[in-house]
Image 1 (cartoon, rainbow, N blue to C red):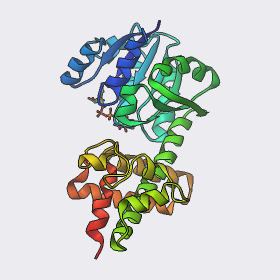
Image 2 (image 1 turned 180 degrees about the vertical axis):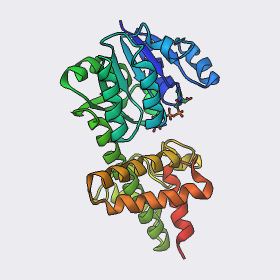
Image 3 (image 1 turned 120 degrees about the vertical axis):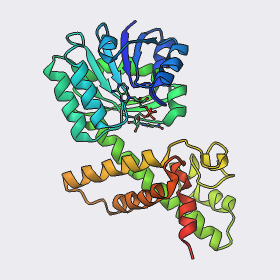
Image 4 (image 1 turned 90 degrees about the vertical axis):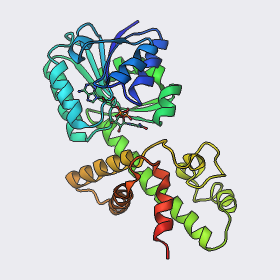
Length: 294
Ligand code: NAD
């Protein structure tokens, strides 16, 4: 079994690291927040004094951090201290440019590296059913795949360095746009006197079918597990959706891609967040749209 250092034991990192322990790996963990370290100990993770001590003996280092600047600062700290030839896997959702810089830091110090952001949220992290989108060389991916397996439902090798992040922001741009589309259809249906269930029954088996409708329906009732049934408690918070949409727009601008609906979705989620909804599930956007209808 492998010795794995896990840096960033927040909402996602802690349950992910717990699944690595369950699979028989030795996990050395570190986070800046003491409460998260208490939870980690309960999961059987050995808590280290700092990130550098966690990585010293590890064959694999996994990071699950908020944004690109955190990943680069941790990589600058740990890459010189990790075992020669260690495998560094960053599972955070960050911009493609920072992801490529993180690969460069790792490789400069003789390590293999993979960017492997996830989809599936805290539920998928706890259940070990996350989808991993991996970027890196064939050799690095071959080493990463068995490590990711206990945390994964699906693992897709998307291409070279940064490709995992590229896939993640493209996917989440679809998600942000499609959730607004589904929410708009329910708001229109309400105005037209059509019941939520009737629209769901038709659209879920017609050409309007999509994940935002059938797995994450933004009105209570048709899909019992959706956050709409729990007063829009996340799930996937609007702040995280806005973060991912902004990443998609930065990437679109840098690459010269036209994404007009992605830009509009970013603006709508920006307003929704600014109205005090950062901690609300992103499907709560339906209430923002209701508020705008005359
Ligand atoms: P979180 O804020 O709960 O966890 C991040 C953790 O990183 C925090 O506990 C923080 O203390 C720690 N941290 C920050 N700087 C550190 C440092 N220098 N050393 C050690 N620890 C440090 O966030 P999360 O929800 O776990 O998300 C983590 C990443 O996963 C983000 O990039 C997010 O966009 C992505 N993501 C989240 C979800 C979700 O549903 N929450 C889903 C998919 C992807």
